[in-house]
Structures are given as C-alpha cells and as structure tokens.
Amino acid sequence: MEKSVRILGAGLAGCEAAYFLAQRGVKVTLCEQKPQKFSDAHKSENFAELVCSNSLKSTREDSSQGMLKNEMRHFGSIVLECAEKCSVPAGGRLAVDRDIFSALITEKIKSHPNITMEYGEVTEIDPDRLTIVATGPLTSGRLYRQIKEMCGRGMSFYDAAAPIVMADSIDMSKVFAASRYGKGDDDYLNCPFNKEEYEAFYRALTEAERAPLKSFEEDLTVYEGCMPVEVMAGRGPETLRYGPMRPVGLTDPRTGRRPWANVQLRCENREKTMYNLVGFQTNLKFGEQKRVFGMIPGLENAVFARYGVMHRNSFINSPNVLNNTLNLKKYPNIYFAGQITGMEGYCESSMCGLLAAYFVWRRLEGRPVQIPPLTTISGALINYITSPNKDFQPMGANMGILPPLETHIRDKRERYAALSERGKKDIQSITL
Ligand SMILES: Cc1cc2nc3c(=O)[nH]c(=O)nc-3n(C[C@H](O)[C@H](O)[C@H](O)COP(=O)(O)OP(=O)(O)OC[C@H]3O[C@@H](n4cnc5c(N)ncnc54)[C@H](O)[C@@H]3O)c2cc1C
Image 1 (cartoon, protein in one colour):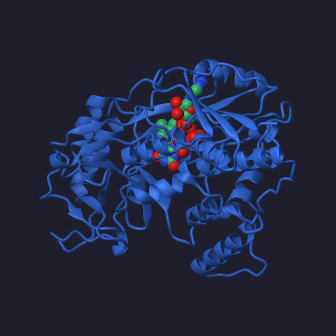
Image 2 (tube, rainbow, N blue to C red):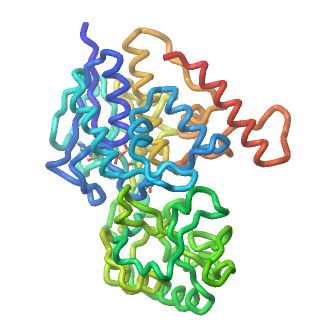
Image 3 (cartoon, rainbow, N blue to C red):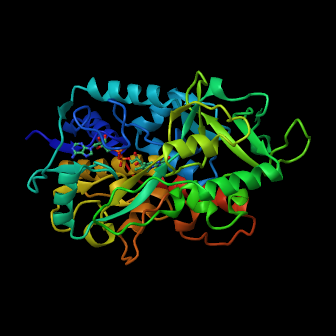
C-alpha cells in the first residue's frame, strides 16, 4: 500500500516534515495558502519564510540553541542545511539572507519527486486521513476555528516584529562596527547613546502613539520573550539599558569609553544593504517609528525597508490535547508541528516538524516510536508541551528545561558544556 501523508502549511515545520518523509519514500501532499492568501506577517511567495528576525540564534556548542542545532542535524534538517548555505555574518549566531534561504528551501521542496504541492487555503481537516498540521501561529481564521473545535479551547497571545532600515540611509559617521566582547568579525553596527540622548529617546518612546490591536476572540497577552520595546520601556527608565539597549562589551572608538546605552543593527542580507534593529520589535504607529527611532544616533534619516508590526500568535492547548508523539489524543491521525504546538522559535518549530514526521514515519513503517530522551532539547521540549500545565505558554530551547547533571558543576560554562555533551550523546539513541 502506498504510504502517503498530507501536510498543511509550507512554513519551517511543514517543509522539514515534508522533506523528511519524502526522503524516506513517503508520498507527501503539501498544502500552502500562499500565494493566494497571506497572513499579516507573511510577505514572500516562497516557503519557510522568516517573518521577523533573520537570526536562527546561537551556534555555540555549549548553548541550548547549539544543542538544538546538533539534534536538527541528526534528523537531517533541510532548514539548517539551507541556512548554513546562505549565512550572513552575525558573531556566533546563525543569521541568514532570508530571501536566498527561502528560495533554496522552496526549490528543494518543489523539485522533490515525492512531494506534490496543493495551493489554496485549507479550511478543514479530515480526521480519517494521516495529516500533519503545521500552519503556524497565524493559522488562517477558518482553519483555526476547526482546530479549536477539535482541540477544545484554543489560545493566543500577541507577538511583535522589529523594523528594518536601508544601509545607505544610516549615518556611518555616528555608528561603529563591533560585536559584543569582540566575538565575531565586527558583525554589528552599533548606535551609541550618551546619557542625554538616551533620556530624550526614552521619553519619546514611552510617550509615542501605538497602533490599535486587531481585536481577537481569545485572551490577549503579550509574550515576555517578544515584548515590544515600548512596553519594555514602560517598566522603568533603566530597563532598556539592561535589555536590548545594553552597552556591555562595547567600546565607542570615538570616545574610547563604553556608551551609556546602545542599539545594535544586524545585517539582513549578504550584500549588507539592509539592517534590522536588534530587539526592537514594536507596535508603534509607522509615523511614530520613523520619528522616535530617528532619534537613534545614526538613524536620523533612516529609510525603513519594513516597519515593525504586531500580530496574533496562536497555539493549541498541547498539554491537554497532544500525546508525546505529537498527535491528538482524540484524533490520532492528526499530528501537529511547529509553533502552533507551543514550541517557540524558528529552530524549535523546525525541530518539531522533524519530530512529527519521524513519529509518522515510524508509524507507517509499523515500528515502535522512540521519544528523544529528556536530556536532549527535543525530548525536553516534547515533555514540556505535553505535561500538565494550567498556565501553558510557548517555550523555546533553554538549559532550564533539561534535567540536572548527576553531579552538580558550579561553573556555569562548564555545566552547560557537560549538559551539551550529555545531550549530544543521548540523541544518538534515536535511530533513523
Ligand atoms: C510576527 C511573528 C514574529 C516572529 N519572530 C520570530 C523571531 O524573530 N525569531 C524566532 O525564532 N521566532 C519568531 N516567531 C515565532 C516562530 O518561530 C515563527 O512563527 C515560525 O515561522 C513558526 O514556524 P511554523 O512552521 O510553525 O509556522 P510558519 O512559518 O508561519 O508557517 C506556516 C505556513 O502555513 C501557511 N498557512 C497558514 N494557514 C493556512 C491554511 N489554512 N491553509 C494552508 N496554508 C496555511 C502559512 O502561509 C505559512 O506558510 C515569530 C512569530 C510571529 C507570528
């Protein structure tokens, strides 16, 4: 009998899942609503679109993100393979040229003989058909309503994206190139503030006009990890100086001193024609972004390639409805993958796509599934999203979700290195 699977959504998770299964001879129908329909955040016709930052975070082996990348590699991640092919300098992080990245993945998916594309918005899920739902945090309305019916109460919160400015509009005489603590090849442009400039900026930011949020039927909460810069500023005059505007590890070559505060700009593409404002996700009105962010030294005449925006970010109540093999308890043919499960972040969503595909594949093969050990980031994340939790919120990779080492190591760096070594060894128990 032909083995076939339907995958909804050609985002990060959907592409990973489709490629993983197709590589193993499974016939995949991949359904994508673009280019007929776009969410508020999606702009490109290509698949696996990075809707906000172009960074896939740290590559350090002794970090949780480094561990996660190692696990993605173990599962043969197409996202990681393509990201590494089009990386841009980002000092110890894996940042990419987003257009080349999506184009590379799209080409691999479209040309795969075992993948058939079906375009148009999916509005229904057939519970009798083996399906992976990977329609992301901005799942279109009609489908989201059906998912809510299948899963009971759905959830949502608001998430924000940072603006991007054109490089040739930055005043290069005011900014300096450097990575924090000299890590990397001066990959960031830094906009240094003195005390007066910071105080004026802080006042303008906290008083600026915000865009109205589109009403949405669920509880509206702003997720801590993606907090708009103006909301963070509202917590107190010093908060930003310990957050996205922290000056630590930087010396302004013009003064020979550490700036009072600093905004980092990270290049968006290989040609370095665009830069994003790191950590400056925002919901200010566009005119206000131009006015207030124009007070950042070097950005006085900045031309915005994209303004920051704020979006709904929906996820299911995974602890109540999902098995640890990522399928619904009530409808076992329906698997979920990506951010919609509550695995938060680009790499986490991709890994979740790989895991769902792996579980489906083992089932099609009639072989028992193996759940990644808790000592791996994948295993710990599955455990997190499927364990009882009445205040469930999305979770990204971090060392805190791993079980402690048998023998405690006091030094943080050494402890992280040991946790990473342990995870690296344990992921090998998953046979592919
Ligand atoms: C505004 C915003 C900013 C974010 N910024 C970051 C960030 O900077 N860094 C980070 O690590 N994470 C970020 N995230 C979180 C998360 O990593 C991303 O959303 C990630 O793209 C999730 O991957 P995914 O595959 O689950 O969903 P997506 O990448 O969104 O893919 C879902 C796909 O499904 C399609 N689709 C939706 N509904 C339907 C339908 N009914 N029928 C057919 N197709 C459909 C969409 O068009 C899309 O192609 C952000 C999320 C949001 C919403």
